[in-house]
Image 1 (spheres, rainbow, N blue to C red):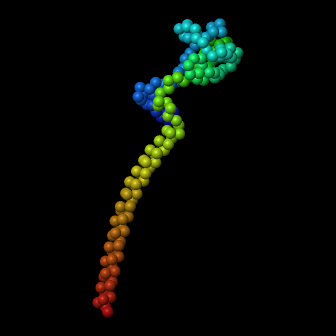
Image 2: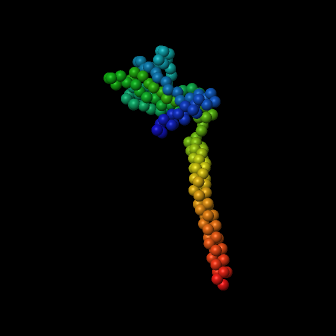
Image 3: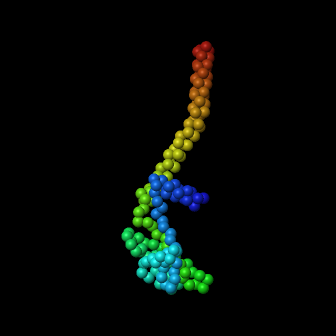
Length: 160
């Protein structure tokens, strides 16, 4: 359930205000120790990434080459013999949308405030539903007590 709600929320946040998703996943082919895009164009990965993955590491994190110098995750794709045949990268873009800066604490506080307001509204409506009959019962009892006290006082006045 949590994954479904998170996925729906993420989709709503990304689609708002023409924002772009900030996560980029790319795949590269590795031949003869060199990485290339799927169409064959040579790409430059951070130094040591291809060598480390070819040496047996399943994944690693390194700083990207180019503007922003953000960290990226690199995972090895291997054939049945264990040789490195491809690399999958996952990184954030440099042009993150404004909505991607919404932090967990701010989101938590906003949702907590909404939940508190909803709880307050429910509590007030339930208390009104419960207190109306009790108020009516209390008024009815006080009317009965006054009527009885008047009759008793009238009888005492007649007797005396």
